[in-house]
Length: 248
Image (cartoon, rainbow, N blue to C red; front, side):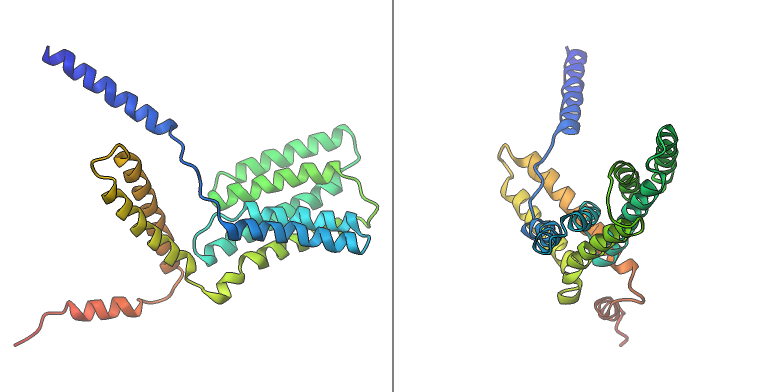
């Protein structure tokens, strides 16, 4: 009897674990990210249509896409590195794609080798994974699209679009440099309060998962920001002085 109850409990625990692996939470939608994406793609397109340069405007908008997909959040310093690497990967991939275009089977073989090399480099870290993904995508796009523009100009326009998207992303760095860290810590406190409010209800486990994810995000965000700053913070100095024993 006791052994069968243990097996039943273990089976239920395994099922809960499997269900937690397949559990998906809806991702929050940021209005600023949506507005930035609309500006990065819509503004060059509108200017190009107004100047009767739709082909060039499409290339600029195409270059702005990596600046949107390469933004993983976090401190602005890390975002600048991630988006910059993604933009460079996309522009460089488009340039190589235009260079190997129009050679039949040799183009297919060259694309295969470039994508294989990008896959190997993408295993280094998360930034390399995102940038090489854009590199491989834009190699294929550059080798497939045809343009009447000079051979050097499409890659420049794609890179300009990426820099424009990067500039839109980093405008907040000038206004409030520590906004991501503040937002991450505030979200951790909100999720902690929501977990306490959900105690005794059917939403306890989901609230706990949300709290743990928010705490992990806040810890990683603050740690990444402090890693790039030199020396201890003023608050840490004051706390350290207050912990010194008082001599009598």
